[in-house]
Image 1: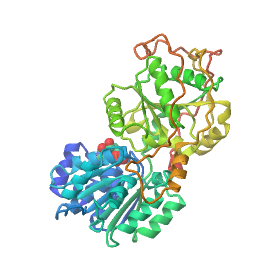
Image 2: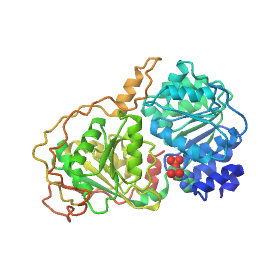
Image 3: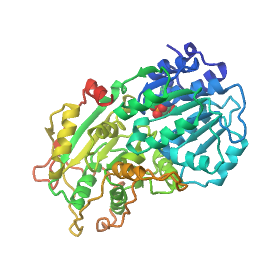
Image 4: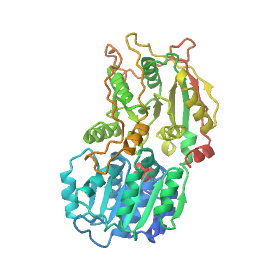
Length: 468
Ligand code: AMP
């Protein structure tokens, strides 16, 4: 199948060609022709499948005739995070470059007034996170009765973040005679309920994660004998110092640890930067841009902040903490081994992680193998900390649960825990990135960090079931 077979106009086909795409992905081939007819679509697909183009292309096509009136956008794309909203906006700009459509991006963490001015001029396409959208609505700067097409992206992540009440409210504010395109990677009961309530006889299009992901990710587990935060940071450094680590994302379960780990890596000479919801929007965008342009080598992230980030070609994923939710493990490691490239994931496991590890093993169906990794010297002066902070998703959920209808003018997807604890004692400026590879040694029995490998492959059928 080619893009010419999908019913798109020459203007769009030209933009697609300029983007360098030669053939539609399965979700695009399935969703675009249906969406063009005006029918509702339930797309079950996750990041990396080309889902964004599967809703932005028919959206642009269907809006190509007509004009938006002031404060009355004609379409709405709801995204769970600012970064995802920004990426969707970049996609729209790319594909709509041969159209005269106007677009407004309403996200938290940036000034309110310029967004209002853009709305006042009229927007064909409104891309928003739920909190900021409702802020504008409640302040009277936005009317939703002109919405012809409503799109919900990453609905299951909206659920994780406690946005479902907001989504239900927004559905109640848009006209019933609209088209709805609804995307989710998984279909938990709450999402099924939303679909049954707000979509009209949708065509269900389901795709699995691209098969090459499973085949090209080599997974390891590093058993950290010293499970203190400092011990884990030493193990992380040893893991990053392995041969072949071009760039990577380090995932932490707690936002405060994102800052601590990033700072620790910087002090040890690594090119690293944190990304989480407490950072200013401009800072997050800059960090992401620096990472994409190889100026930052290691991105330290929380699940919520990283979700939906369009990061091509990451050689490594490091789980500083094994995720509590096994599904998150699959999402995280899916950041490497993309598009046929090989990648590695390295997960640190301490004595406290038995249950989480068992869940991951059960989900991916692999038996651990043993692998030894030479440990970095454990810093002597690093104080052990106890972390009792809840995971950011859980915290966000409980916070959202108590929200009033009047909200502050920011979206805060992450928890509020401040990163006050000190990072490791500074190393005497070893330019680790410059020396990359020199410190990595072959397997050694008496290493400070004992490592256990994982099966090389996640069987594809298990990935499919994991991803719904
Ligand atoms: P998404 O799943 O929407 O996040 O898209 C993942 C990546 O695939 C993005 O970098 C897109 O630019 C890219 N992409 C989307 N559609 C295609 C296509 N038909 N061919 C090649 N790449 C694509």
